[in-house]
Length: 452
Image 1 (cartoon, one colour):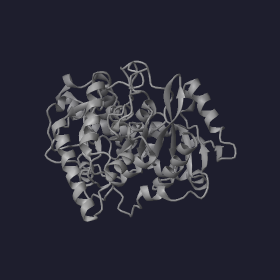
Image 2 (tube, helix red, strand yellow):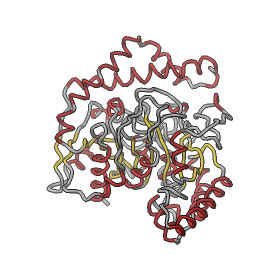
Image 3 (spheres, one colour):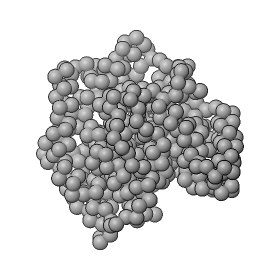
């Protein structure tokens, strides 16, 4: 095991615990940022979660946050929710002040002209961007340099490798990730943190590397459900530039969590078509977990209809076709700078016809409608977040088979660090109806409260 069990310090606070300490004056943003930077310095040689850091800029932003906090308190004014709180930004999300290299030598030295919409919103909410976290190659399967902080021999998962590892290793309390198949939920499971992918269209993708427009979703990592809610609240304003973004009203998720729960959630235990491919130990652990609630909650094993058996392939057809369309020209122009794995996927994506692609997209809503009996009768679906513990070795980042189905449907998902197999974390995934992010987060908060 790694040195993750450090002496307690400000870097170990959740974002909202840090918010409270900042507001009461027992902590400054400078002290918090400095503690995080010292943790990074001590651990980066092992974990390697960061693609780029600018400590001086982060400390300057922290000083500005401390000054702003004093002025706001003196005036009795509202304090932005993330004022002075450090955050990591996945290196496919544009930042004007820092490079954004997309985990690829093709984009070495790239400096965007403007912040992505989510980064601009987070800065407006007071967040301090600590740096850019490592992503896999173009946010796909080619591993980056990051290692799992719980066991440096193992992968942290991908593609949001650095973000998950940095939060797990107490280097930053919050970090951004993206998911097109399983790139938020799987690393969260492997690294033992909370990973939250909201409903498709909930968060703007303007200024973010496009892999597959019907699937790409922005989310993040935290060490509490409340922190995850506040992170998404701070960056979910409507953006007309993202054609897929939902424009309806969004009740604040943090407020929904603060409401008193009327009852324990009703959960449908769904094994999904990927279940036979999970490790035996993980299957046994998860079945034991699902059966452990007694009278505390209703958890009912609920099979999916047989028409779902081929749904994972439908997600792949969409994703791989769009990878061929969006990344194919990059690989063609720079073949020496692109991995063979990505070239192979581009070739597979090019093998699908437009009719294949259209059919895969057309099947999505009818299949989602077939889920409605489950979504109506239960508060959330309980299902594995990964096939097992993080793989030994850094050559692969694991399979998204337990995530891709829910991403295909555009459903909100959260991974909770509630299980352990062979001394390594294993996440419990909750998912629910599109737009029912608040309900999924309430169920997640209840589960976390029962297993502390």
